[in-house]
Image (cartoon, rainbow, N blue to C red; front, side, top):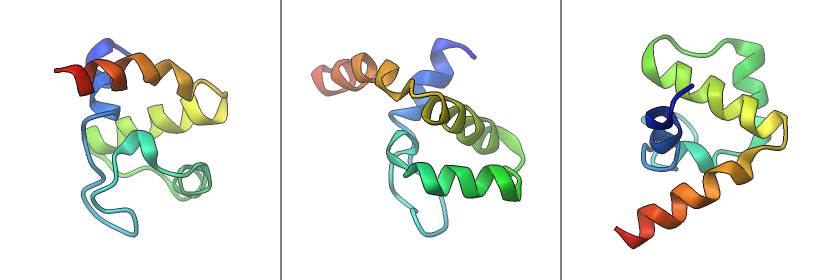
Length: 74
């Protein structure tokens, strides 16, 4: 994990599916759990979804708050 990946969680939208257009950081935990059971897609989107799942599962989503604030102030 690096800061670029964390920044992408609060700037990149889900490209397809039920939550298309929603920021990855805003995906519901039950959807992330479902993806984890099903298998994350290949490539960068899969890595980001897996990272968001880990943050959500471990109660660390609040780590993204400063990045969201910075994003709104830019």
